Length: 151
Ligand code: ADP
Ligand code: MG
Image (cartoon, rainbow, N blue to C red; front, side, top):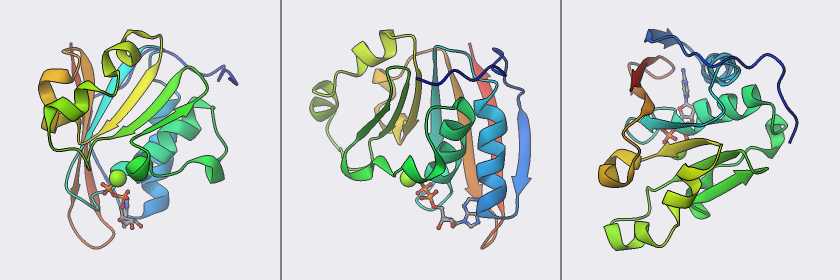
């Protein structure tokens, strides 16, 4: 994995707005550069809110993939970038038994950044300590992004 020398373990809490897909990716890059090495980031919000878009930026900020390498995990559930970054999308699952087969506990035990879409639907599987980023569509291109550290 390519290490990002700018990484320091803090993410500022707060609420910001973005006005384009590119701005959300840029915000993701900025947050990604500041993520701890071991953390779960729960991305919440409706379909189309921008979770995958933000995840693209986060993954770029972590320095583990080129922009064109970042895909939506909806059809594979789990995308792994090296050993240290995971992007998971639980949208297509509806039963806790299905989640049990994914090996999430093993992933959370690693020194890894784990980005999860729709994880709040299976909250009993989510780590108690995590960063929550809630995206809300305000207009066609406007999004509200709320960042909270839950420790
Ligand atoms: P989700 O993963 O939450 O379902 P996606 O990131 O896949 O959402 O899709 C977000 C959609 O909204 C994309 O089509 C994107 O182009 C569009 N969009 C428009 N404005 C924004 C914005 N400010 N931030 C993020 N996405 C935006
Ligand atoms: Mg998505």
